[in-house]
Image 1 (cartoon, helix red, strand yellow):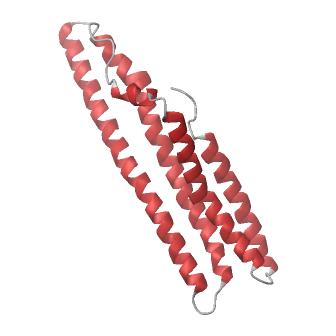
Image 2 (cartoon, helix red, strand yellow; image 1 turned 30 degrees about the vertical axis):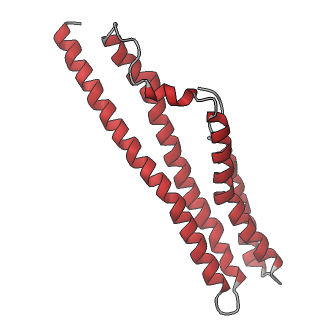
Image 3 (cartoon, one colour; image 1 turned 180 degrees about the vertical axis):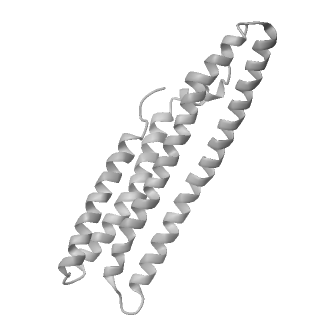
Length: 181
């Protein structure tokens, strides 16, 4: 490849890097705001269920809200990780091939993953994600189940919600990225 072509390809790769990093930044902001949205929706649902002498059946709104927001959180988190993998495994090596005297580019993309505390942080994040998106809605179901006589249609709904929560919990664990880089 001629030197001019290499320069054009290099510039295109840098532009691509800037674009995927911008998408990653936007997704990080959106993902992190989902935590607050989940907490706010939980607070609203719990508040409504306690008003007027208590209506525990309203707690059945908490699991679908948590699963929906949790799934959106998980999808965005996976896309954030996928962008990082793409930069480390594809884009970076293609750019480095254009600059043989500099075999490593985008060093931060790999350096931050080499921290010896990364796995413990990922485990704590897994616990926090499970607590917010699965334990809290299960607790709401337990309160509903123990609050008095339950009507069978709502009991059926609560069992279906339990299955949804279990699927989300399994997916959160699968995507936890607990392995070394």
